[in-house]
Amino acid sequence: MNNENKKINIKSILIRYGVCAVIATALLFLILVTNGYWGLTEPQERLRVLCDAFSLPGLLLVLSSGLILAANAGTFNGLLYGLKVGIEIVLPFLPHKYVKYRDFVEKRKGKRIKGYGFICYTGLVFLAVGIVLLIIFHVQYP
Image (cartoon, rainbow, N blue to C red; front, side, top):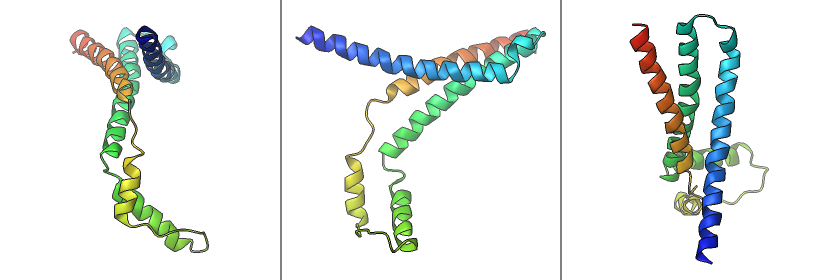
């Protein structure tokens, strides 16, 4: 029974990483296509575009996981509460119930996102490849 749970857990982890990698790879190919990678003839330009194509998805994934971390820590609770109260003031005809800030924060504590580390790790892999390509670029073309 325990072995089956491990297989299911490993399978779900691989699916998470796989989907994240597919999204990052799709963004990578989009960057390559928009920069005309296959039409470039100079190796210097090809390496630069390839470096950008790996770095951008990596940075986006790492920064989005950092944004999730900040949201889980409650960084945006005040802003969200202010928006909620502001909307209630501007649109008084909508039914609403006044909620104290303390209750709002307690309710939001239960809505934290868990298990998002795969986004950061996938982004770090793409970013590492981009950094290696950047180092190669600066060594070959000073």
